[in-house]
Image 1: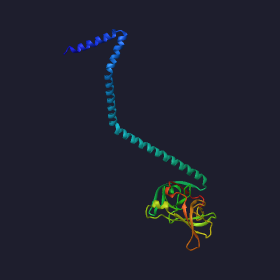
Image 2 (image 1 turned 90 degrees about the vertical axis):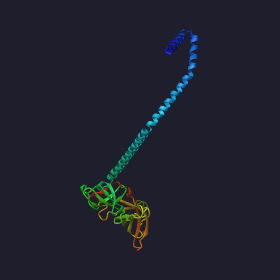
Image 3 (image 1 turned 180 degrees about the vertical axis):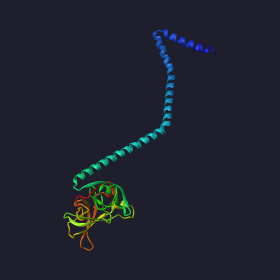
Image 4 (image 1 turned 60 degrees about the vertical axis):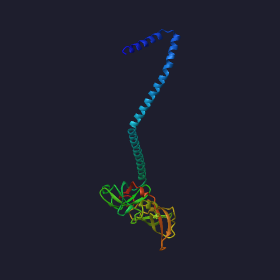
Length: 282
């Protein structure tokens, strides 16, 4: 038993010596035969190695799959959050640019305020709270508007906040002019119903506001603009308020009433302007 390894080694050495001393032609034939005999074994070995690598990769992927999935989900969430942040900043910058342009075009002294809360005991969407107060020079009964049109007026004012009564509130009253002839009237809020979703009520209400006491026969029609008249000392003259939807004769037949839709989007207020004391209409 102990002599057999030596015999194998000696045999291999003899084979190498013989191959090295064979004539070139015989050596090539011997090498070709050796390759042909070894090829099946090499093919099997290569196939086994490939299978082992595939199994190893599969096991490694299966082992890492949960971590990879969690990492991809985290990266996806972070990318979405970054996109949302950039879109928000872009929207904020566009809004601020519009506000700056609008402020330059107006002759009133305007202060920008941000809506920090909506609604109180009086009902949904009828009041908003701003982050401006007495420390900013505010007091009750100051006009509040956006770049599109009138929003309402300040009511309760604290040191750093104030409440704004929207023009859709039933207690709101605005002296205005309507139609091509500039007929005078009083704009009142139609309020919102408490049946169902108040947001939908504001979306689909047919008469968010109404102009009353228009002279019979005044040139007022659907699509005409309603603007502040400047009477009363609260709202400066010429601020857009709304668009007339319909006109009808009052039951007394002494004047006309007109349903009005506000031009300012009161459902999506973010930044507004407060007309400071000393501005037009003061």
